[in-house]
Length: 172
Image 1 (tube, rainbow, N blue to C red):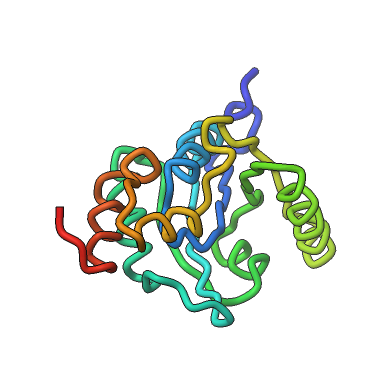
Image 2: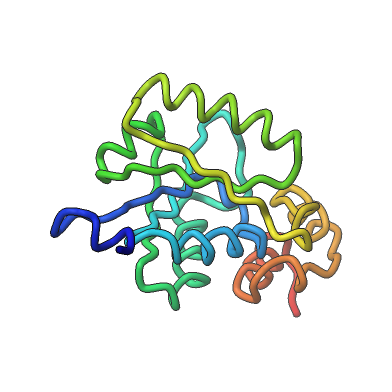
């Protein structure tokens, strides 16, 4: 019996992959594609973190995510600025998806998963190891390279590369 047939009729496994996605990278996209295979519905949720100064607005990040996930029918793009567990409840989601690149990531993510579990026992966190070819990749690195007109085509999808060029006043 597969997982879908063991659930009640009409019950869906909904997961949220939260992050800043400033900008979305091939590492993020790898996690999105793999997580989308595991859930009926995957919501990629852009965090509107008021303590940071992102390069892209929440709406721009959502637009880029919509563009790079348009071939994934069960992926939705959302945003939140409240506690993640509240957003999860509002979406009737049961699982948080987090990508792990390193031991350092794991330590931080374990703390966050434990905190979220304390806030809501009904929400689980799963960790997905990043593809080793993206283990060094972060949005911060991408922005730094793009800022100095470095090549980012192997790090981000073409639409994101174009958006980065636009932000830093570069043309093709």
